[in-house]
Structures are given as structure tokens and as C-alpha cells.
Image: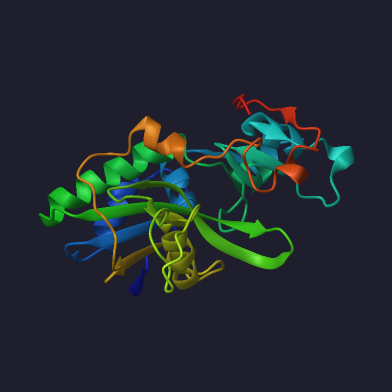
Amino acid sequence: MKITPVRTEIIGDKSKTILDILDESIKDLSEKSIVAVTSKIVSLCEGSFVEREKVSNKDELITGEADYFIPRPQQKHTIMITIKNGMLIATAGIDESNSNGYYVLWPRDAYKSANEIREHLRKKYNIKDLGVVITDSKTSPMRRGTTGFSIAYSGIDPLRKYIGSGDLFGRKMKMTFANLVDGFGAAAVVAMGEGNEQTPIAVLEDVGNVRFCDENPSEQEIESMKIGLDMDLYSPFLSRVDWQKGGGGRKL
């Protein structure tokens, strides 16, 4: 896999659209590429941010954005653990790094943004097969540091199913799915960086055994990526938490 980080101007607010930024920054695209875009620049371009000086209580902002949250007395650290859009994430995805005085929220509709980016770039470069991944960073239990992952995608099959196929020794695999979009997100974020690199876009080429899709992800496909607490491998831990409903209001 070849990953090329793309440098952009410093993005501070919604003075330009995400399509403007892509047009200015990406010079060429080839068939069967995947374009990774950080969720932060999508949010900044669409105005999904709040001025820090106007927020008197960050916890209220977090709980308002979260679907569910762990109450502050149960938190071990200052960072609040939440669930948003079916994903376990710190502070409902709200971040203040590289934002020049803003609390940056997740995009209003990351899948809509991913679909619009793909449609625009396909037309501009006259290519058929193109994937788009909107990325963010997360922590993992009992591991130091952050890794990238996908909060939305378009144009590619998000999973590779191994169930029913044989391993090297012919043993039938019973439960394995490879999460391709999170893998692409992780790889892209390594190349894009987490600090002042100023490369919030990356182009992935030679991605291998990926199925590109002409249609946008359906609601059923998006929901199929999520696992309820009752079925999750980590249910013994997650189900013991006194989750409180936040302003996002999704049903667990």
C-alpha cells in the first residue's frame, strides 16, 4: 500500500468548503484510490465547532453531543468516556487541538460528507472506482497512544468476510471479519500525523483486495457495522457501566 499525505493551508473556520480544500490540495487521482480526510477539517469547513470562550462547562457540551456517557463521579480521568454514533469514543469526539480557539465537534453527517466528496472527486478526475474515508483518532483499552479509525466511508465495502473460508491449514473460520475502513483510517492517520504536520488528507493507492462500490452505503450497511452492548465481546465490562443518556439520544 502506498500512502501519500497531502499538505493543505491552515484551516481555521468555514471560510472555504471541504470541496474547495480538496480542489486546492489534490493535484491528481488514479483509479482505485482511497482518499482519507480528517473529520476535523470537515467539521471546520461546515461550521461544526463552538468557540471555547463561549463554553462555561465543557462537560455539558460533551453530554449534549454524546448518545450516552459515563457520569463524572465514575470517571477515573478528566476525559469523559462516551458513546456516539454507536462508537466508544472520548468526549463524544470533541477536540480542541489544531483548532485555534474552538471546540471542534464531529461532522453533522459524516456519511453525507463522504458521499459528496466521492461524487465530486470522481467527476473531477473522471474515475469510476474511488473510496473515501473520514477519519478520527481514538484510544484503545490498556494501550498507550492513539490510532486512527473511520467514522464514515463511501465507495468501498467496509468489511472483508472470512467466515466459512479456510485458514492456512484448512480450518474453517467461524467469526472473523476484517474491518477494512478502520484499517485504512489507522494507516492514513499514521501518514497524516497528529500534530502540526498540516497534512489532514492522505491518498491511499495499491490497496489490494478491496471491493469498490458504485452506490453509496445504505442505512442497513451502516448499521451492520455496529454491535449492540448485549452482543459485544466486551459486554462484561461495558454492560456494568451506569450509562446515562446524552443529548444525542440513540438507543443502546
